[in-house]
Amino acid sequence: MSFLSKMPDIAFTKPIFCGILGNTLLSTVPGISGAGPTPEGTLLTPVLDAELVTKGAITSFPMKPNTPTGCPTPASITRAMMELSGIRPLFINTGLRYPPTVPCFDVYGDVGGDPRYGEAVPRARELFIRGEMLGETLSDMSDLLVLGECVPGGTTTALCILRALGYNAAVSSSFVNNPVTLKEEICRLVLGRIQDAGVTEPLDIIRYAGDPMMPVAAGIAKSYTGHLLFGGGTQMLSVCALIKAMGGFQPFVVTTVYVRDDPSANVQTLADQIGAEMIYVDPGFDNLGHSGLARYCIGEVKEGMGAGSAMYLAHLTGHSADEIRNKILTSVSAYS
Image (cartoon, rainbow, N blue to C red; front, side, top):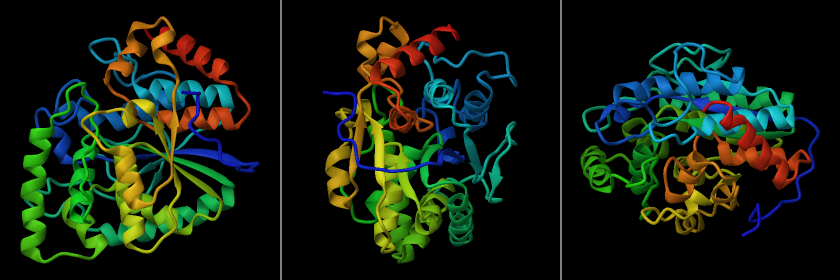
């Protein structure tokens, strides 16, 4: 496969990369998320990822941006692409356990609750409206918006939302071995609560089962007037499903081939059902001579913090596939 699966004809002069940060308590369920050193540590990951993308280093804690197996975090790839394209990233705090260490837009949301036991996003409608307001602001600032996300545990909330909206979804994971059984059990309990409550309206489904990123991203998509690209896999497809249920316009969704090729997920089939057009980036990490990056090819990490869309954005701004690969290799090698 070539570096990109397709290259839409997009004309722009003021591109922006924006990362939506959020937490869900589902990430603290042991075995659900690999986006952190421990289940509780996943709640800190969005803050540290934003710090890495903005500053080029994690300065709050004495740690390297690699998994225990040496796989570079997606945020380190996104950082490399921001440097290469000369774009200063923006971030949105939709509901974090720990205060961000870099400047952020703040919609004053709360950490997503555990949907097995109560409402996950009680103020989903309010967050959607604030997302609309942000979309208007970002429209004044740019004519191309690449919107990534960092929500550990978010593939599980995505599974709950997609199933609740009627899709036969199978979602990806940051683990090599997707904890499908655990996710299915959580989803079964959550869907039972939704059914018992008779909830059918899209934002009420988010209120019961989603995470704070979802209504904000959907609100931005409703009001943004330029070209909009969602960066991510099944988490962003769940937002697309929400947008469709609300009668909105579908953005492109950009992710890596490592998400597409996850045998435990049905990404392209799901996108077809929703009507979302996918763009896949193949960075060829198996041919760079970096053992950590090669782990993406066996299914570790796969995507995150809009890494796939950041590579796509770098290509849109005039950089070749070889330039992008060399920049990633040089950058992540410096963290080893």
